[in-house]
Length: 184
Image (tube, rainbow, N blue to C red; front, side, top):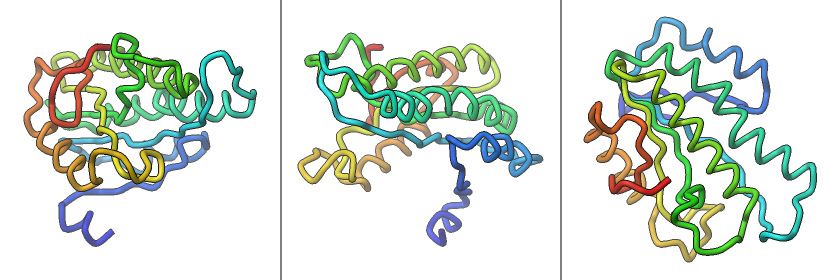
């Protein structure tokens, strides 16, 4: 947390699947104004197309990756400074146009849905701020695994640079970590 403080940033612990925690977010942030907000929450379950997910997996992935942002993002809009930037970490796997296989289809469906949520939120921010979906890249994390292309540090550095460069015309975009536009 010390490094977060040194960046003049605020990390907020939030259980996105707990309605009381989500409802308490607005109270915790009341009176704050943020120039940049990055929403980072998501889960992945493995499963290929043609293999139905369990009800438990479906509920967890869709609640965490779609319903939670639909509950949280409106609270964040209220604390976004004028012309502020709101980014949601999504995934290139949510792009319908860029798909090359049917692996992890539940995760892909959830990310396509949350990309739609971000696009809808961009209309709420039109003229007031910028809302974008961002792909962090294939990152060496628990989810990405040890063979991924990017280190966490490189992904974060790229995302930070991309956030700095966002303009009102970026509103409603789906962007790669390095700022390149991605097809929905």
